[in-house]
Image (cartoon, rainbow, N blue to C red):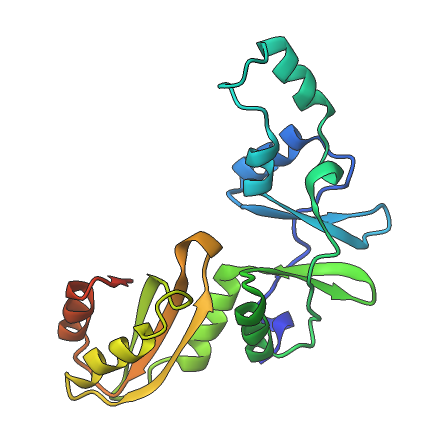
Length: 213
């Protein structure tokens, strides 16, 4: 299963000279949190996220006047704050390789580049859908997804989750995690040999885990 089967082709992009306010409006209008940055030849030169834009914008709490803030906003451009040389993948890369790369780098979305040109983007949503396709429950199995699990600072989290699952007499067929957002921990996928997942979900929730319904 390759990236080209799951990516969003021809994503919305901006150029380095795009004003931050314009990039912010594009994100708001299209309900997205990141934009690839391309040059006039369609080559990827960076990525800009909503977080970077918000951090760069002058706060109303500053001593600057409204006129001064507006002046600064009129000068700030995407190229001033973008992440340069972002990690990218090929449309021919396998999804599981991209998942592993995301785990290693703590990245939730990748621009997709072919022959030097941006051709798509694989976001958390596409990666999630591809993952569910890979581990999708078969007859006699259930898939449970946990949100915001802090596996980096809590090294025993995965073992505790597995014990809760097995306490239901449900052998764990597969369990792995993907970075969700850096500030919100990881998304953990569990495929267990049971058709009755509601009790398992209740116990996981009682243990303090956020269970996706």
